[in-house]
Image (cartoon, rainbow, N blue to C red; front, side, top):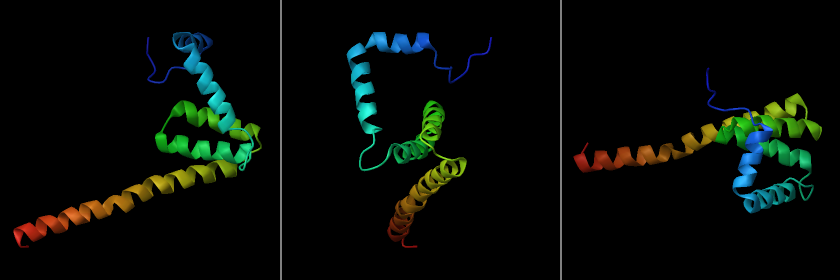
Length: 115
């Protein structure tokens, strides 16, 4: 029998997780509810941010869950994909921005070797 790297979240696994640390589970659920409630940003915007972040952190559970929640809040396919593209640009942008570290090291090595 093949075992998936990412098993489906079942009621049994959710209960096991909650039973192991019920106080922490309750605190996390309360925190999550507050974070994703309407505030200065509406729920839909927060869920679109979560979709983008989930793609950067590459959490398949978060990608699926927050995509569904964004759609429940009225997000369109285009909005979801634009959020994903923002994530892709930011992830690529991090590599681009940090290229200065590589170039700085190149310059240090050159200066030490007299090149």
